[in-house]
Length: 404
Image 1 (cartoon, rainbow, N blue to C red):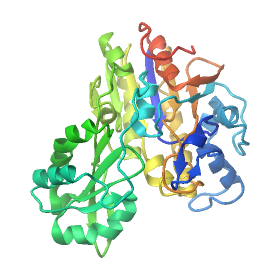
Image 2: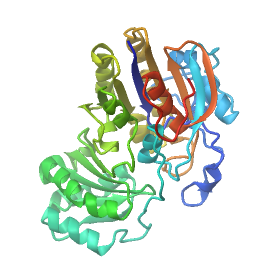
Image 3: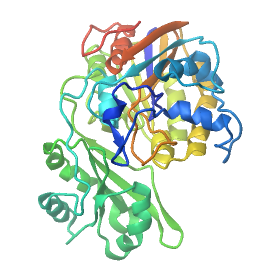
Image 4: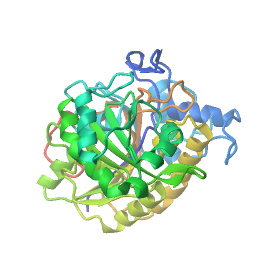
């Protein structure tokens, strides 16, 4: 019995990217020295992450596999609280794609580095070309949009949510990522209408080499405040060549996507899809440990590290999420079968101690269970996909080389 479980802890980077100086936050500050996991561990040990938790960062199960060792390998930084002797597969990976975003990281992990430079919208008002704005208005049946600028996804709801409720106009914004996001109230505007709008404009956006259109539904009132729901939908460009998901399908295996994996790969190479909040996703992962068959790939993304805590620079919240995730893992490990490989990694960084609100360019940890103690050293993102493929007995494809 040979199965593979590839689990992405969204944004849980571990520092040390050799090209971090070429990527910026707050427009002018290079990412040199950013270290999401390392700096969270330091903040916890120093008593700077005490909201809803206390003391050093507690991740005994991932650290037992080699998480602390992977962080130290990647960055050279200290990892207070994460000092276990590795008992699993461990190392760190670095990216070659010219982005520090979700599609770049996931595509490259799945064996396909991004072969182009993404398109971005300028930090001006308006941010979007008039033709694109007109297309949005035409599809939505409105005479204007709100926003049309760079903005934080949570802050713009506070700023423009009340006006959206009065006018019914969609809130359209972007960031330093290659993305356009449209936020709308699920009841005032309509969830199906929002998703249809984003799907309709996606081809035009992709022609600009912009990677994603994201539907950002929310609920709430002006009096009580607005909050995003879990009904987010991403309309991403299709990867330029077959990925690990396609390779598994071609060999007769089934690909089970958990979280936003289906959206990231434009639903190509995906057989089953489970979504929800991270707590729901953990239940889906535990269930998949029972249902996945020989030759299958379970590919999961846990997004709340990034969306809820990294971008908001919430160190305590990020630490709480990491500790919750780690505490759930015995349920996963208890269901492992002989021949299983369970790999944990990340797609980029989002250091909550850093300036700005953008992702940070970092190496990512690679730790795994099922193959005993194995130090893999520094590798490439694409080597992760190549190694999963090798474990499943697939022919060598894509950009990477197996470290198994």
